[in-house]
Length: 140
Image 1 (cartoon, rainbow, N blue to C red):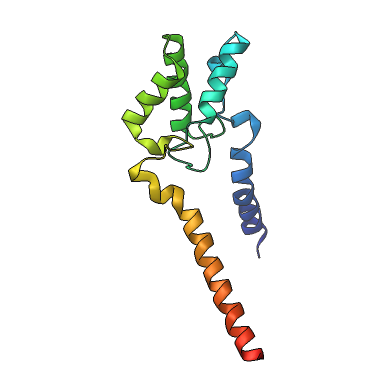
Image 2 (image 1 turned 90 degrees about the vertical axis):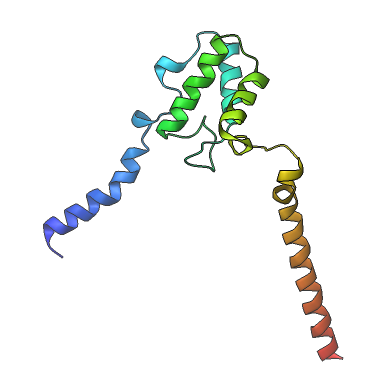
């Protein structure tokens, strides 16, 4: 491998790490924090309850995506406007659907989402039970 190709590959491998450094973190930048500790705690708590629509596995409080930054700013603007947590969540659900909530509500259109882990566990238990029964029948 040539020296320049090796250097290029090393730089490409380091790029994702550099992009996630604290200096480039999008999570609550200086211009987005409240001076009141109670308001800041409320904002951070609410942001932890909202899913980043880009990352999907992270809350908007943790995510570094530009959309999460916009949503954090939107949440804080609505808090300054005097909206309650429920009103802010309702606004975001109306705009983005229940998927934006880290814990979606239990309702008919989300039953499968809530029941899926139990169905998978039950299916795995049934497969295990059948396997043990067959092994016992062969041993007898």
